[in-house]
Image 1 (cartoon, rainbow, N blue to C red):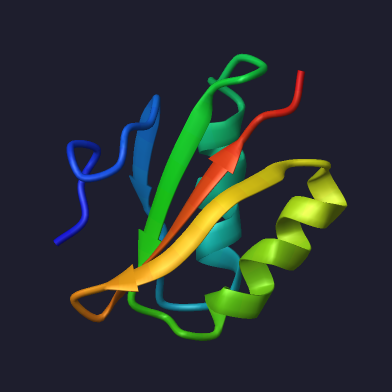
Image 2 (image 1 turned 30 degrees about the vertical axis):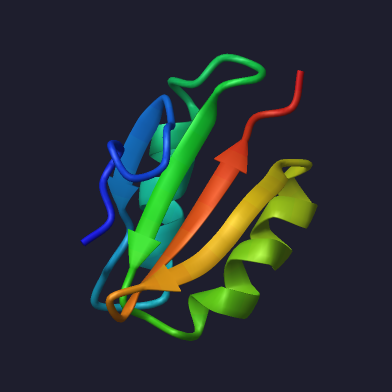
Length: 82
């Protein structure tokens, strides 16, 4: 299981949701509290987000620092640009 102890981040959020809008709504809410340079760790079990999150980051001018899979859970380390 991935946690903020596994990979250092400023904010940890589980973006697993029941429909396609829920993960991005949670991401947007979490990003509002971050300062430039801070990092958000988002986790989900949805494989579709492997392509959706990078596209989201490009649209929002966010840096996708790292993404991967641990124990059937996908993670995305996103940094807010300064």
